[in-house]
Length: 541
Image (cartoon, rainbow, N blue to C red):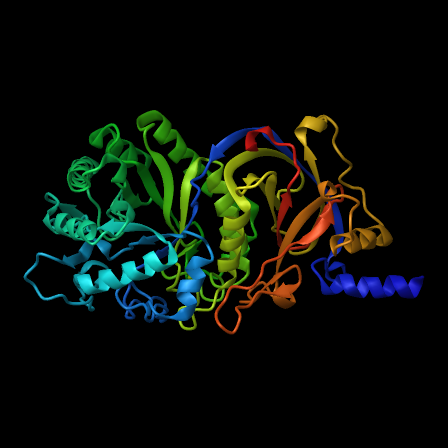
């Protein structure tokens, strides 16, 4: 019997639970309230960006962009199309810091020149140009892969720099008008147009007064209404694509008026700069992560008070600004930040969450050089496949380092839970409950500890022991770092490395089947999606 137990222990140590390297797990309870939704996301909540930065964009003596911009990305790379197609209509936002200095080469007489270094230019670069042959090729990729496109418009065109970062003057709409007209004439389906990038509040590099901005947004809305003849064909108008400033955003809504801005977009870089040596500590600090909740809450309140016709989008979020953090933003540890932000934002009616970037910098879902997926690519893909648009409320009886989010299951009956363990020493046995069938007044004993044999039996069940009925099963997707190295670029799904096939195909991402009434074991610094197909949630029916 002892030999048999030893063999089982070796099997379990090879999979997700790693008791030999951590203290005994603590007990925790997650109670899901399935009667009503507290928020809803868009069906295409997960979004990724492609930026304008040229290879010369450098920070901290590193230049991580290479050939990954809108103007030079290898659109024929076989991995690229397959990576996008795996999402079934991935939303892609084209934009970034240099978008406001882009000239569209349609109806213009000047030669179409790329961005080049210029000391007195915005962000140290000259104006750049998007040729229509390149726009045609980009749309070829989007139509092939089923991508939903958001395009960021040049909101500084025609304006002039008054002093320091302040820009004044009226926006010259002629270039954008010609570009939108060309896009429509070619039949390219742009789902939404975003006006400007990071010009709100104090601005980043440049800023524009909210009242002036609001008038120009109204003009752009008129252009869209004029050029898109059929009302049902009109794309969404997004603005301002900057960092949230409550007073500025409120003024934008009041100036532009009812129904003009369909979605208020803001950016989230809440971890600091790419040279910050404390990035990993911040990601694992629940108090630090939770600070972002104030921004999502304030955005929701601003819309409720000043613009109920609009929704909230995160149109750019890289966590770490200035290209992302090398060996952090492109490794397993970043998925803890990324998935936590996806869950947190969704609770406040954020409809879309765009990740900076699909490819480019250190924070790409795909590696800039090889196009191979970084760990966050698989995290995004699992969210997209498992988490539906209905957001449910939960109660947790657990330490603060256990984060939990619940959604209706994606396009199927049941619910999906996302569990994130921020502790690098403690695992959790998480009991899942439905508030319809449980008394919230009864608090479990958090000090209770399971014996080694009891935990071993749970692990054997987790590895796939069969239940008597399909109604008594759940699906689990456990994500962990290879060899326990949080800065590994290889992510494990249920103990198996996630790697592309030789042809660039995305690997199968299959769950383990578990008895529904057993606790979920969540290893230290790991993530789990838990699908409960038969969970009674009236809000999801």
